[in-house]
Image (cartoon, rainbow, N blue to C red; front, side, top):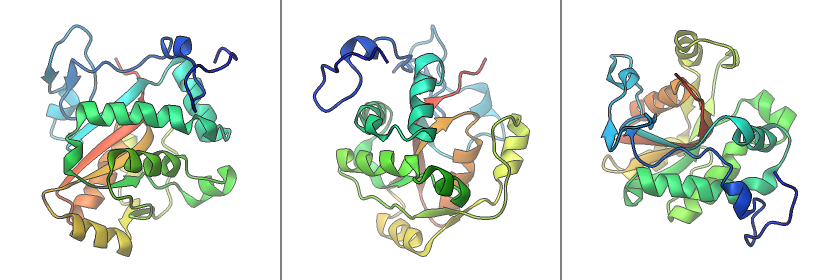
Length: 230
């Protein structure tokens, strides 16, 4: 960000620049999706999550608002190979998970799977880098290949909320190894899915639907950032 020397060992964002990042507050959040409402205290249920088309996941939290310098940092990590930011980002994800979730109930951690074409062009799945490190921080098992992408779908960018829901239907599948870790975790444990950005929550919701259909009891989600919505 500022180009100066980081004053935090093993990290790449200095203390001054951390103050410029638009972090999501820890209070005044929807108890399901984590959407914030400035001025409110405690938890509430937002209009989207009270709707009959509410997300399938049980609880979610995001570290930053996807705007300004946070957007630049996430996009650099996601599209331009700035993987050195992993330590900073996992700090943010860990803080979010511990604030929003009962981490002792996590059965295993899984990354949002990427499409084969994206892995080909980028050379990596950015969510795998985040999720594997977060699992170690939380002391939870890591299931790198619990889920996979299937079928053909358009990119979500530029689609409205209804189109996003339709676009991701049937685009995930639980692998054999995923079925085994779900069975081993048991109904009383939660699957924690790690993604980079939540926009409407449609992709995470479809991911949760697939996991629950395979026997998962609860599905929780944490993301680096979430889109700012009116």
